[in-house]
Amino acid sequence: VCGMVSVRLPALLSCCWVSSGLKDLGQVQLSNGVFNISLSSIPFGDFGFNTFGINGQVPGPSIRVQAGDTVTIELSNGLDPADGIPCSDASRFCDCMFTNMHLHGMHLSSKGVLDSRSLDGDDITVKLSAGESMLYQHVIPENHMPGTHWYHPHHHHATALQAGGGAAGFFIVEDPPEFLPEVFLTMPEVLWFISTHNLDALQLMADEAQTTTLRNASTIAAANGLPTNPILVNGESMPTVDLPSHTWHRVRIVYASIEQSLRLVTESSSGGTCALQLLAKDGIYLDTIPRSVTAIHLFPGARVDVAWSCSCTSYPCSVVVKSVPNPQPAGNGNGNGNGNGNGNG
Image 1 (tube, helix red, strand yellow):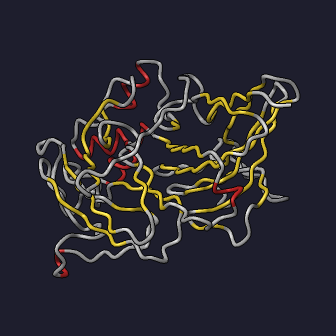
Image 2 (tube, helix red, strand yellow):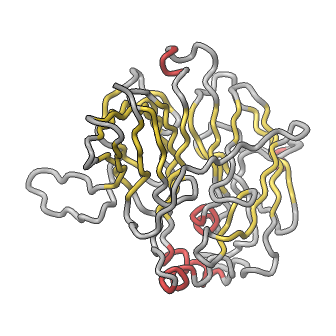
């Protein structure tokens, strides 16, 4: 029996701001052989304050490449040069008007202009000033494993504000033909960019950095009756996606967070069940796929590829994806019970 299963993603730490539908993140298209990425200050949903975003959205659009590609990225810094303070010896959060771009998880050279190359590689010491643009060039090795990765700013002292505020996106190395068994290559693909935004922490960072972006974020959210620790999927809170039952989907997950970890499970009060089959962790396929799992462990920066299929005892039904604490070892009564699982899967 086939039908539709309504999956709500995810019911995590916040419960009071609900939207519908899973946003399509879009894809950065090549323009004259270049991927164009722009960092700027943009509204954080309907919360009433600004955050850091990519190409006008949180999270940014996806970039998809293949092993062996030479990838050129133009990064533009659209921030206000006067919005923040420069770093001093005592600074923790500062320089947030500067930026750069890191391809998290990729095996790439960091060599660049200082090493007599024409363009910079994956060098996190590069410092791009507000109002300026620069070109990166990455030569992806022919033998680079296909997988799920992500891009984000990585300028020291500003990474937590910029990436933690939402300036990030998928960076996917595609599977070559016949790399995987046909059953996995032909699965419908779904992208879930899950992010937690601790507005209390981000507000403190913004205050210290003296930037108007994310300034008073927690205060404004609380005043508007909105969560101060929102968890988003593709920039939306608790979106609902309808999936055909008994159909396997390949779900690519990136988890972006400053400090929180999650352990995701599924539950249903209407007869829905989901089977999860792990394919890859952090952009690396398991030696043998798939592996049946009952939970997905996410730590800051983690990536997970999982095959996902749901069904109902009667149709339609719904399934909620939520975070639960890690089970404690026998004899250890120190469970925190706050939904912040710390497993490393």
